[in-house]
Length: 327
Image 1 (tube, rainbow, N blue to C red):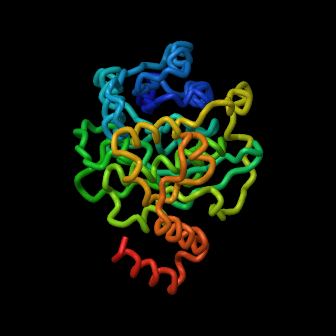
Image 2 (cartoon, rainbow, N blue to C red):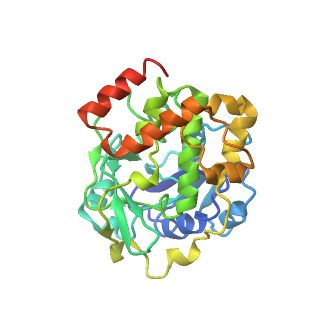
């Protein structure tokens, strides 16, 4: 452990993401002093994987509800316990993410290590593609790194994609990291991503977050077939020479999204979710059910899908606005 710099602490959470956990651990353990994972009682072998690393600490979360903000707080508070008052920088990484191998060598990496308490950093995603050669860069920045200044954890009612680190109640603009991205494998497993996208749409309805089902279908968790960003070549320097991450990935698993969708249906009943455009042949087959939608919902979803590539045009936005009065 390097005592000439702040502690580097990764916080994350997991529930049965064992297909990608080996990549997360092998890559991030190269540089992190501590890795803290809030685990929702995983049953897929993930917990045995943690045990292979001396710098991994597990926090058990026996509440199986989907609460991202709560899980992040549990990991962060455990990180502060491990730091025991020492200066520390926290990296909030999802279990399917890794910092690139060369991040400390870049200008922005040195800026992070030399940052002052209270500094916040955000970065873009590089979505690794299944060809093992390319990635798609997400256009938005996400708050991922925080140099601890003792700030209290702020309560957030929104548990879906909520902040995973303390955030200031004042206006604070994170510092943009431009030298490197957050390497993200969420798009690598096509089947996993497809069912997770469906789960997030259903969860949005379950939690009552969006005012309109049009908004859920248009802008939240878009179907991968509508992704149009250009492919870019993966950078060799993002990967460790002693870790072949692609050999560590296990794609032969049932998508976690299927199990989570079953839980939502058990809680609310399937009729509540007729309004969401997720009911294709693949999902119905996985759930062993018939398409629950009425004719009206099927026609609306057909319109939304056909017009999705043109959703930002004036005429489609106008039609959507009218439809929101009726659905």
